[in-house]
Amino acid sequence: MSKEITSRAEDYSQWYNDLIIKGELADYSAVRGCMVIKPYGYGLWENMRDVLDRMFKDTGHVNAYFPIFVPKSLFEAEEKNAEGFAKECAVVTHYRLKTDPDNKGKLIVDPEAKLEEELVVRPTSEAIIWNTYKNWIQSYRDLPILINQWANVVRWEMRTRLFLRTAEFLWQEGHTAHATKEEAVEETVKMLHVYADFVENYMALPVIKGVKSANERFAGAEDTYCIEALMQDGKALQAGTSHFLGQNFAKAFDVKFSDQENNLDYVWATSWGVSTRLIGALVMAHSDDEGLILPPRIAPIQVVIVPIYKGEEQKAMINEKVKALMADLKAKGIRVKYDDADNARPGWKFAEWEKKGVPVRLTFGARDLEKGLVEIARRDTGAKQSEPLDHLTDLIPVLLEEIQQSIFNKAKDFRDSNIRKVDTWEDFIKTLEETPGFIAAHWDGTPETEEKIKELSKATIRCIPLDNPLEEGKCILTGNPSKQRVLFARAY
RNA sequence: AGGGAAGUAGCGCAGGCCGGUAGCGCAUCUGGUUUGGGACCAGGGGGUCGCAGGUUCGAAUCCUGUCUUCCCUACCA
Image 1 (cartoon, chains in turn orange, red):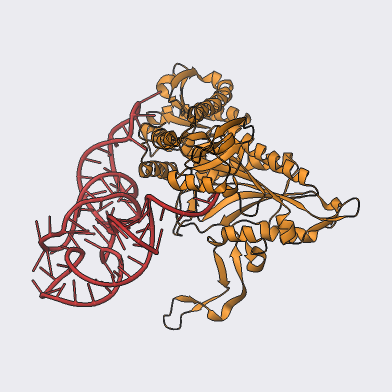
Image 2 (spheres, chains in turn red, brown):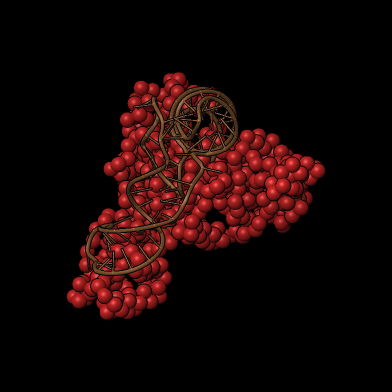
């Protein structure tokens, strides 16, 4: 936990925003609620995307692309889904502008160019995709369809936050169609595990896998599975979701298939997605007051080299040694950057790369090099040590892995020490105020009680963990009998 | 939508109560000296003070209206 972080939300907000802006990940744009992802931040997203894409393909999926516009009539076909998103849709109503007759040089929307049917800018793609699948599926031989799409979506949120909740965001959405319920459920759970694998092993962020309660379920889903992560201020963040959609979309879009016995039945569906919100999770979970801390496996730059020299002669000597090392490191697949800009001093560069969270910094100083040494600094711990130049090629890959593990362990220790069992309402409120984090508590299983708890405490049920042990108990609010604890937290 | 705050140089802010030619820090540009943890000196450029009215000899400042943004509630990957 960062020494400057207080429990006050606005301080934490400020800290978070500064990290992202000063770390060069993203910035606010001219468009309300939308962000500009800068090259460094986009590089991070690309690395995450590449790993996920490989995982999707390894589990049998292929990529495709569907339109950004969804005709309103298609959008409203699955009622619950449409209702769930209706409040936050951007809608295209016209297709042309014209010069304002009263004010030359200005444009107005041409009232003559009103669309016959409005187009919804996709907040998610189930509607357009299932309308398409209808034409692709006739027989069990056409199944399963295992498609993923990398896309942008728009959700017109009232309140926005860089990466966590922007009006437009980038994501992937998988949409699969299956012949049986069992196969669809299996797919839903399989993809949840893919997400957990990615977030834990690449983003170094421990997650809890679970199922959402009815209140928190995706609009139009039968079951929503999720991974939940804990941020440094003790609030939870939903890091990814995988939905079992049952036959809801198949029924809404009339997607039927003939099975092997020639029976006609509706298709079973899943959808699953993670977004650029993951970058927000990464920032909030690992950073400190000096800036970002990026896990080596997805960091855009894994090693940065800063030279320190006096005069051209030393500079040339250092350049030569750096060039040789860089060639070796690149041959091992390590992303390395040489910061040889001569308009900034070393101290400036150190601070700058620390803000950007580069896992390892090498300082090539003329003084050390005379002894054949190079200083290695770890971003995660701040530790510095000098090592012989000729050992670096072997040492750095090992060090990067060690840092990856170390960041994960730190986050896991924090998470584990902030899951608390609570049995009374008084303790529940007190724990939320004094030591925020996950709270494992009994709940009577009714949506009404969940709603009441949310109203009174601002805490929601984050999930019912997958491997949750059964345990007799009493609901913390109503005292009614309960068979298991569920995880509560205040959330982003 | 309800409650609170703010709009002044690219960024961050002061000035406002008490009207009198627009200020500071960072950034930027020029020249020079520097380089082992955000260098220093000197000089320069950049603003119709959110917008529209009003009061006044004179408005960043006072008054009225208006727009925008942020924070707290509601919604949400």
